[in-house]
Image 1 (cartoon, one colour):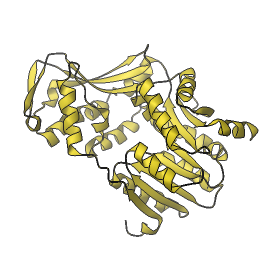
Image 2 (cartoon, rainbow, N blue to C red):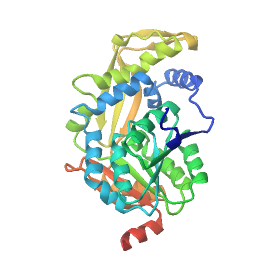
Image 3 (cartoon, helix red, strand yellow):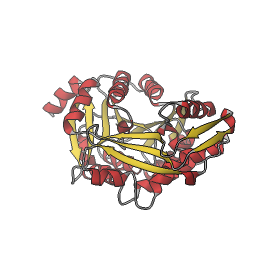
Image 4 (cartoon, one colour):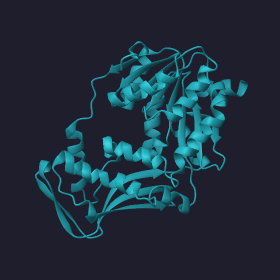
Length: 338
């Protein structure tokens, strides 16, 4: 990090993802009547690289669609912001899309404070290097924490207006009820003049959605199976990855893509650190991820249920994806008056 330390620092909150978090989740999930593993644990070093590869796949439209919106609408989005806004991002990511918005914000204010919130200090450092190499008038204060704790830290330290950025349609990984509760918690951590800009994937045809989560090259399958490989690496598991298959299916009524790992045979898998063998029947499924899609009405309902006002929406050219600007009642009046 030499050369960028004057413009970059990390606030350590003391939270680290603990090894026993993963062990506990695996123990509870594989002992359940309907087996499940948390998508939270997809993103170890290998999983993160696989996800970056997924984002470049022809079937995976989400990243391209969201970036298209930002490229086309960044100036319009920035124009909705109050003076001297601080940019707060949930998850640091690779920063490719975020840079588009930073550039637009720096066209209308002399400097910008950017505060990414991420559990991983190394992820914060990696993204900071990329950002500061490009923007000389950018200051970065990373917050190493889970999202809610990180937002509380930001609220205590920054008194001026903030834009909270949550890209990538991560809200889809929550059930609709849990999404509303999470956003209520986010709203409670924000001040009255703060805004939220959130990516939300839209409902669309099964023929588009299922290939996005089950690509022809099998990269998403590798990403899903890496959960079992991670159990082998970190918990002394003995999974034969060839004995499991990736499955993705769209439930049109619920408006969600469901991902599973399916046992192709009857088998018992030992996991040394758990001191047990896990039995699988042929065809038994292990649930790994939900990805909810939203209609425009469902986005409005989500905002209302989360104590937000939906101020503005932007879409890509094919209307596959949306960026949604949300705030409180005072922001609604200000935007209408603008």
